[in-house]
Image (cartoon, rainbow, N blue to C red):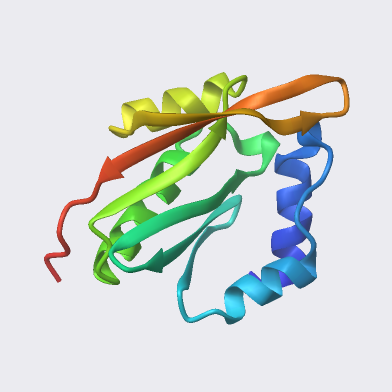
Length: 142
């Protein structure tokens, strides 16, 4: 999946937030040796691994394919990819009002380690806090 397709899917997945990432933004991230992309036909996850930590930059699922296990598989695969690159933990930010994503991360073993007040702007209401979540990764056994 190239930058243009990633941008189209991201825009669909994050329509409520008002702005998906552009193809140029994805191209820049994919050009980095620190970034890793996991793709399924109806979703993708992108992480950046530096100094033993993986930061989940985004996880996007086509809205027509939600609640079918796509995000859970992508999350598992991106964690494994980060561990193969030497990450011992993964962290991410999630909007406090994103109940589905919060449930996904909780089921996968993430715990809240912080909060950023008013981090996400919303076109249809007040800003929403970002919850900082962290998970220790299983060592790579490959």
